[in-house]
Length: 215
Image 1 (cartoon, rainbow, N blue to C red):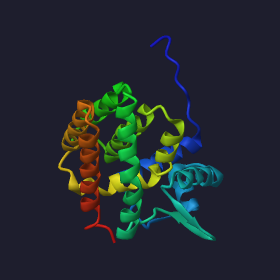
Image 2 (cartoon, helix red, strand yellow):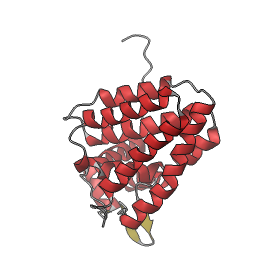
Image 3 (spheres, one colour):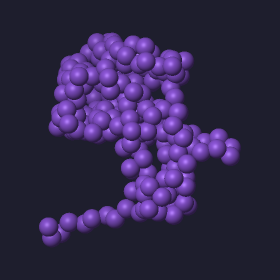
Image 4 (cartoon, rainbow, N blue to C red):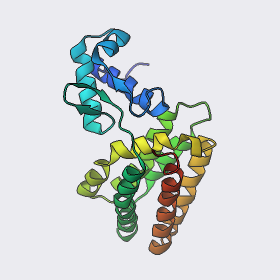
């Protein structure tokens, strides 16, 4: 199609994207090690390319490194989940309050809902992970506060790992989309207390779904 600009991605970006997808889809399980030489052979790239991709995912919080050992997908145990949500819940409630008190436009949040709605039961779970985070990120962005959005995104890696771990709790992406649509409906009603209560309930459900399977 004429006039379209296609931005090429580097080999490092391609490897990082593939690993990210495998992590979210469950092909790479929590605790699994990622030897650089094996990955280089698997992807048909040089080892420094794999090393750079792994570093990218470590920066995102999706992988961790230990000295003289291969990177691995961190396991989020029960204590990790509870600690993460003890920060996430008040932060997202603050985001909701800011959105409503500033009467922020929510077009971006509606578009994010559309991404969830557009997914089917056959969609890779990695797309569900990104769409779910996209909804919450759009709310943070709607506040108009770059610092608040940056603070939220600093938790992004662990949040995405949690969403990936939530797969057994949702019968379909449509059910997840319905949950987020209902949440947005309450936010759009304009009642701050109701919206905060609904966000809290939404995230507390995630904690309940996560902690029985956390180890």
